[in-house]
Image 1 (spheres, rainbow, N blue to C red):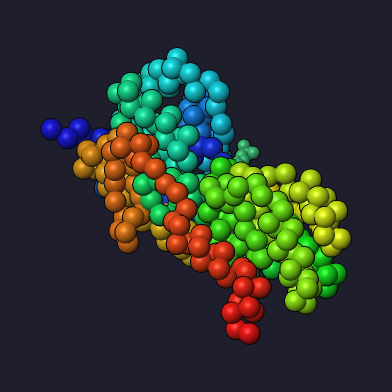
Image 2 (image 1 turned 30 degrees about the vertical axis):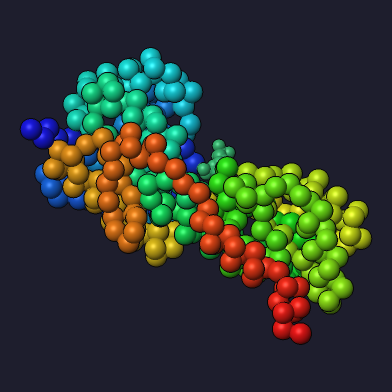
Length: 333
Ligand code: F6P
């Protein structure tokens, strides 16, 4: 028989992501509307261990939807990573009469949630990360805002790069995944896009590409590099030495995690937050919510963590084909 849930908590964990507030707001308002009580836990799992929590009402989430960051704040917790930490957290939740927790974060946060569920704490997870690196979903809260922020910054670097006839290496976030680099690279017309999933560390290929491009009159060269590859500053130095083209590295960094969420992030995060509250109402727990094949779905948390994800090969082939202006010119001549 499905378990009756009367009181849930919500927390955000790991790196913040624009749209987390829309998800929190939806969890709170949908759960309250369905007759549950809601507690907000501040600063992720660490805040839970420190019992930093408060009762939420519909007004607790007022004026938050359009704001970046997370109103509940977030943290990474070494104490919670230990088995004893999870057991302590489960005890605290029981003492506060909390029947289940909505966890908004990346797959590290999912592992924490899975650990909590082993101590009989029902959980529901939402994909909150700018990295898009969660296998059971083709959408994660914050990705859309982050790529638009990064794209805008890359366009700006491109302007100055072009005026100075320089090569620019722009490093974007993504931890070990190349989704931000892929989307921004294609969207900004980068000449080279370096993805951890595909890059073979053949720097000579980039150097040859620059030399060839210059021969056909290209005045600038844009390389979008993923954080998972890194070393942008030293790579820029080597490229400049080998090509004679002035080369600068720009590491976009944390600006990519901030700012007002896009409409898509607000909308999808709202649906996912409401969906989490619905799962608790139905007593369907230990689930991960995703958006796959055009639909919002939920998966068993173990199953979701075992799923694998990669850059679709076709996307990669297209990215390469579009960035190689030399090949196009040769074909059209
Ligand atoms: O997961 C989001 C992310 O911004 C990654 O792209 C990046 O590798 C990481 O978080 C940085 O984390 P921190 O805030 O701990 O430096």
